[in-house]
Length: 379
Image (cartoon, rainbow, N blue to C red; front, side, top):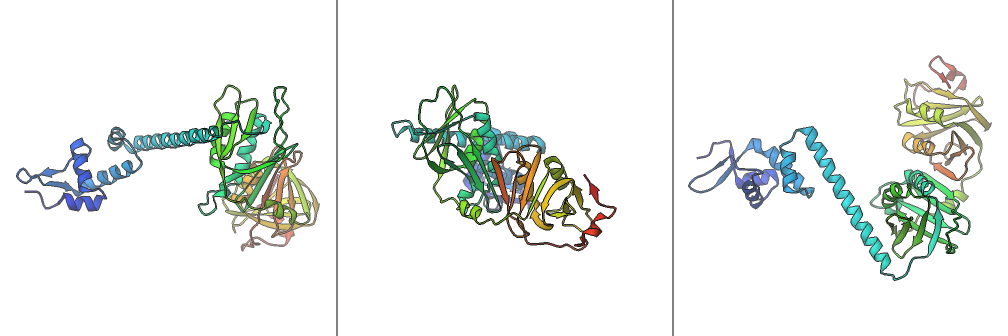
C-alpha cells in the first residue's frame, strides 16, 4: 500500500496541470516516473516532492521543447537550464522569422513580376537609420502600427518615421546614385513596414554596399548583390498623422546646443525616472525628480528665454542617444509643448519628445540663485 504522503495519479494531475494520460506517457518515457506503483492494481502514486519537476516539465513542453532537451534541462543546474531555455527560444524565434520571411518572398513572387523599385540606398546608412528610428516604436497589441516604421519616398528622398505617441523620430535619406541602376524609382510611395522584421533585416543589409528596395502588395523586398533577399511585411493600420502634429508644434522659444556625451552622462548619473531640463543663466541644468539628488549644470549655447521642461527618462534618453554627431540641438517650446532633439550639424535625423506635466518635487527650488549650492556639478 502507498504511504499516506503519496497522491494518486488523478490528484497529482490536477496539482501539476498535467493530464493523467500525459503523466503515463512521461512515466513510460522515463521523464517522470511515479514514486510507487501498486503491484496488484497497477495504480500509480506520486510524491509531493515531484510536483516541482512535473510543473517544470509541463512548462517546458508548453515551449514546444523536444523531449531530449526537456530531459537535459530537468537534470541540469539552474544556470545551465537557463542557458538551454534561452538557446531553445532563440532558435524558435529564428525559425518563426525565417518561415515568415520565406512566406513573404513566396507571396511576392506570386505576382509574377518584380515589384517596382522604390529606391537604392547604401546598406550601412539604411541599417543605421532603421535602428535609430525604431527606438521610437513600441509594442502595443491595441495599436500594432506603433511598432512599425513608415517609409515614404519622393523623387529626391526617402523618409523613415516612427512614433510611440510619446516620441516621434524621422530621418530623411538621399537615394544612392549607382552606375548600375537602370530602373527609374517610383516617384511617390508610402507604406508602414513591420518594425521587428526590419530590425532583423538591418543586420544583413548593413554588410551590403547598396540595397534596392522593391514594393510588393504584401511588403517590401530588400535586395542586395550576392545576398539573400530580405522581406518585410506591411502593417495595414493607418499610421498616425504626424505631419499634422509637426505643423502645429508652435514657435521655438528656447534653443540649446550641448555636447551629446555630457547630456547623456548627466541623465545616466541619476536614478530618477523623471528629469527636468532647466534653461537659465545661459546654461542647461539637468534636475532629477528626487529630493536628495543634485542638479547638473552643462556648458551650452543658449538663445531665447529661460524655462523648465520635465521629461520621463525613458522618453528623453533614447531621443538624445540616437542623435548623430557630437552635439545635439534642443528646440524647446514651453513646459507642455513637444521638444525637438536633433543633431546640431546634421538635420536629417529629428526626434520629438513629449514632456510630462510640470513636476516640482520638494527640495528642488524654483529660485535659480539657489541652484548654485555646493552639490551642483559643472560640466
